[in-house]
Length: 378
Ligand code: XIL
Image (cartoon, rainbow, N blue to C red; front, side, top):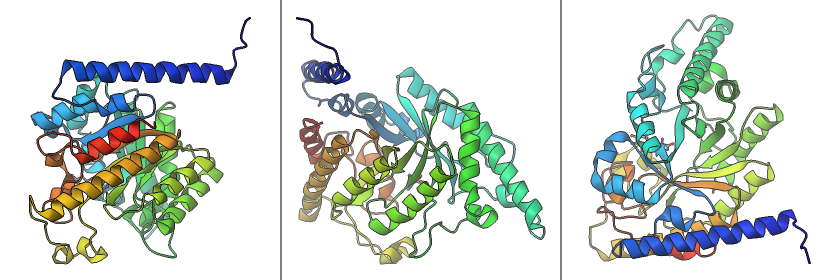
């Protein structure tokens, strides 16, 4: 008897093939290199891309390069695609480091996340120069510069970058305020966001366009970002998804992440986890303006560090379980590859912080084991 082929049976067959392929790949990886672990990209092959944020210089380090090649099928430029590097001077572009990263990724069939076109940090001054006494002319001037920059950069990387964080961290941190006060906001009001998205879409009709922010796991910050997202959608702005940075600390409650992913799905948008790491330290807010207020460094090899690594593994496991439950999550990127290359060793202050899934020598940490266990539910 012929069975009717429905979309559901097709999907079930595809899922079966995908998981069979995944176990074969995992087994082959184990057989070939007994001392190494199954690549993360294999564990989640049927679910989402695995990303790591690095710069071309980091790839000279063998530990970092090996981790990227072994585990990642997506790479985010940690810094080299930011405006202060590409566009330090008006009309003069320095694509050298960005191009080097893209070339490495193309050689190894790794997708590239573009990060980021518009950010309040490191926005070069030339964007905002001009005579402010004529507000209409000044606005038009800054808008033209913004659109020119976005058009040129997105055009340069057309077909090479699969998703852009068009704007980064535009939601306010303050109660009662939706948009973050920034040079962009002061020059153009909230419209700079719309201008950037429209210019990006015009330059590349196929690239995914994301709004990226931190703190989406917290209700107040999430509400502010969602207010911005809804207003963009209401205006027909071409927005494909929300990037959740997820710079976490061990006491973070992961349920807020679940809520954030669901809220974005309800708007019909995609999700990506863009900058995941789990710090040992939950600092007071004052630490970000006065390093003396930051928590003191833990001692390497101490009981506290052991406890933190355990708590970190627990949180990583819970997070990857949540990511796996949301088909809208397309990619999960950690902000770095191994603990040797994390920005948290120097930010917000110089101290021991081991926030990633692999240690400073590239070996898997307890977090890796927790994630591997979570992958069986993917
Ligand atoms: C950080 C980089 O990791 C650092 O090397 C650089 O000095 C500053 O920027 N949120 C973001 C990232 O969106 O771009 C930041 O990256 C980390 C916080």
